[in-house]
Image (tube, rainbow, N blue to C red):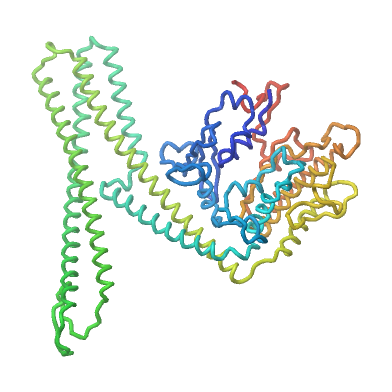
Length: 604
């Protein structure tokens, strides 16, 4: 049985929209059903849910932690552009949360007929995830596929901010995001107005817990009656207790009904005021169409406020009057919607009140007439309790719905803030493009500096000629990556390529998260088991440990720059050079030691 350590990284990638063909772990194939991923995207705690083994399955995205997903409405996103879902492509959502502009990238800047692709988070994952088969692989960064390699080059130019043909794309993106921001504001206002109209803006989990407690109490009483059928005194006490509980529910509903009635009256008055203002504006508009004498001393009554106005007083334009009339019509329509909603709520409350009054009257009548000898006290009491339970469940469902709406409002508020941040980022990008673009040579010089630093500390022999070429691929001993035959050397080059990119981003920033996943970076290196000394399988443990020392140095660099970052590594060994404070060991698999789990899925 495989341990399934690589599957951990593949599951993360799958939740971000990756393909299921990477999930070749037997236990996942036979027993895995659904994957959940909780992640912090730019300060927004987000949970992804995706069914396994179906590349076209939708991805549910919850704007909450995993343990709170039942209290929020998920976004339904497609994993790719080939399938459609209500909330669009998951890549767009991730880019938006990361405040990365959603631009189009040409496959090649040299060819005029080169296809332009929408930037995808899948493109960026190539720069964030060094898979096991890519470590020391001959096809690093799709080097053997010319068109894809060119596309990767253009994407990295965008990441590092060296594209000079993105201005129009950024302006279009700015327009689109501004339009979306306005839509989000309208959506949030509508939800807020509804919650205000139903007096549910301040609803909280405490009310839910109280109602659930009431349901639990009722269910406990039903259980007691079932177990104590012969106890008539208990039945009488339960009748009295139930009457008291029903009275509490009845009084609470009556108070809510009266409060809603006050809100309804206020809305009706507000609607009348808006209608009066609209009538006055319409009158004003008609008045403007009449010709009047050009006597500057002539005055008349304002149709809106009835104050005296001179004929030569400043006037609003017809467009302003039409806009105000349109605004009033929208407010009137909003009032109508709130009034209708409140009326429906009142009808529901009135129905509950009547049901409660009827139930209470029936219970009291039967209790007062002492008809216990003619009907089963158990059946009557349990029916009453079940009726009460239904009423409380109805109230609970209403409150839970409003809590979800409130959470949706909070989610919309967060989206508005994030969208505003995205707009700010796009504006800054536009300004950067307009003012000063960093040249590709400067970028290459900085990247080469980071790569050269890592290679000099790699403990490799014949250490010279390290750089990053124009294709953003590593060079060592003056030879291109594809010309290096040693698997061990290619391992160091590929790992250091990704580490140098992360170091650059921590120092200079860019359109890429400071995040990295490495799968078995020590492969092709002898680690701690001495083998025949040859470069195809480097055997010096110091070379292996140097990889982890450079990872620790990234940690120190991030602390110096006050930047957040994350590196996730799965490997067959744990370097001896690491201190406890240098890492967070999340999971260890060991088939020979019973104190550790055998693998990712060990009980299948």
